[in-house]
Amino acid sequence: MKNDVGIKALEAMERFITTFNTRNAKDWSESLQYPHVRPSARRDPRIFQTAEEYEAGVNFDRPIRMGWDHSEWDSKEVLHASNNKVHAAGQYTRYTAEGEKIMTNHVTYIVTRINDNWGIQSRFGIDLFDESTSNIDEVESLVSKVIEDSVSATNARDCENLAVLLNYPCLEVDTGVVNTWKSPQEFCKQHHWLPTSVDVGWHHCGLDLVKVIQKSTIAANVAVEMSHYNAENRIIATSQAIYFLTFKEQHWGIQARSTIEKIL
Image (cartoon, rainbow, N blue to C red; front, top):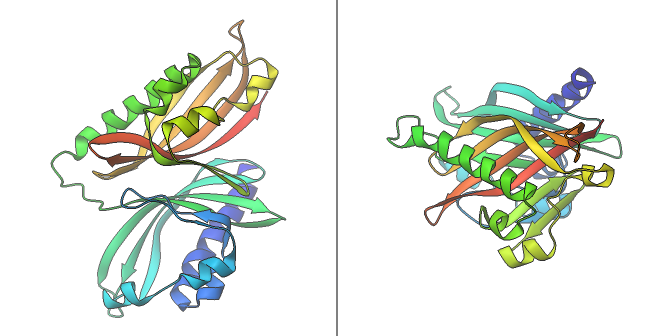
């Protein structure tokens, strides 16, 4: 299954770049899924409900002023896959007409299937990527600690301590849905971060993998894999997730996530 849906997701990513290169706002907007959102460390996210709404906001002037002629993929990799959702890491570079590099972008894509159509529903982008920055080595340990603490708080059913580990507005991206929480109070009032395995006896989660796959000094994408246990410590489900963390107001926090959960 991973190979089949992975191919569909990579094809959707290819359409995304191809239509962007045409400078055709309508075609580009139709390569995406809706509601569509691109969380960022620099600004609050805007959720686009339709392709028409997205098309109305497209402006190619900024990249063109930078000398942009076209973009090319450097790499695309499927990280996690299910029937209706794929997490894929990508790197692409913008070029001038003479083939000179302008900038490289590192993004993890949430690709979903809606009405049997695959498209990008969200882009978790890493801004200002610069490996030479002095404190870049600290990022991995800092964001990993946030993930570990969030799992501990979830296992303890401690929403207050979980809520302070998030940056707001915080987003949860699922197939055809984007949930948004604007504050810790709203998050705890509408808390949906308990896994769906709670319906089959979930008691706690155990971390199997925490891997930083893309990072800058202000944002990071982290691949997380967990086993879900019942009270008898038997595994009843597994999950694979992408956590998008941002550094805001001297605080690393979870800005968005997407999860693929499998009940065993």
